[in-house]
Length: 313
Image (cartoon, rainbow, N blue to C red; front, side, top):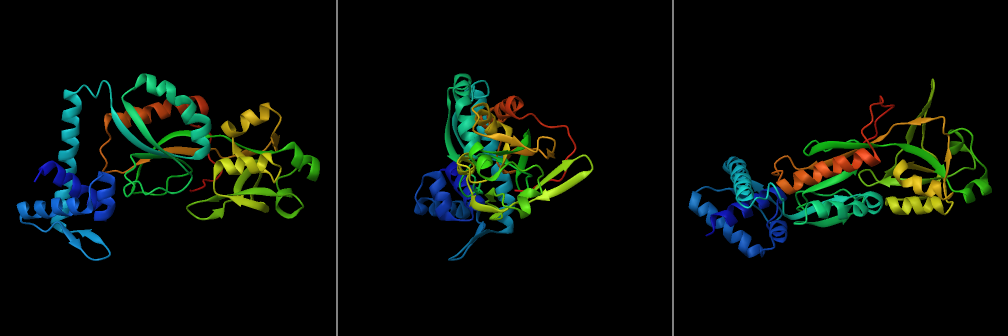
């Protein structure tokens, strides 16, 4: 039995709650993972996991051992990193998941600069707006907008997206320009709905002008759950949009989107990098997070303005 492989297999089963998922993330067969854990239990003479046909749970002894194993694996990675100069030149694969518009408009265009700086890091990049099971899918980190509500994750606040309200010229020519946000509620005007994956609902937006404050839901003829599709629907004139400035700016410059309610304020949307608290922050993950922070200073620096009302996603 390779003790390192056995400890790694055991830790991954605990994290994923499944021998099948653990095997997939370790690129091993389920049989191999099962045998490694069984051999580890035989060596320790302790039952580490309770197995049923539907679920795997860690025992009390297994939970204590898991914490020790994670420290050993982290120390081993650090030791190998120092010997291989990985701390000076991080290397390896990073599994990252980011929202689709952020990937298309900010992250991917900037990656050549990151690659020049860290040529030995390569990415498996998930591009989606869906909730990600970071542990179960063996993802190193995710970048997400909105308040971080999963308290089991470690989150680093990396930026704030300034929001505005926009419509395509074709929409305004057809339905006229609304002069007050309340007109999006009970008139002929329509919005494009964005369905947040965590709730499956289109959330309202809080807007303020002086002492006046209201929450606008709007009525839509189309709701989507992807940021790129949301933008395209607005460009097609299907309704009014709430957009981060980085998404609207190039289309404003080309006259494809026009701003509305410019004397009203909206809360900026916080951006976070999130990762598991028990996941060792490797050198490659650390430099990626620091790079994201630098990237967001250019595109969406952290706001110092007091919030109107937070939205959780």
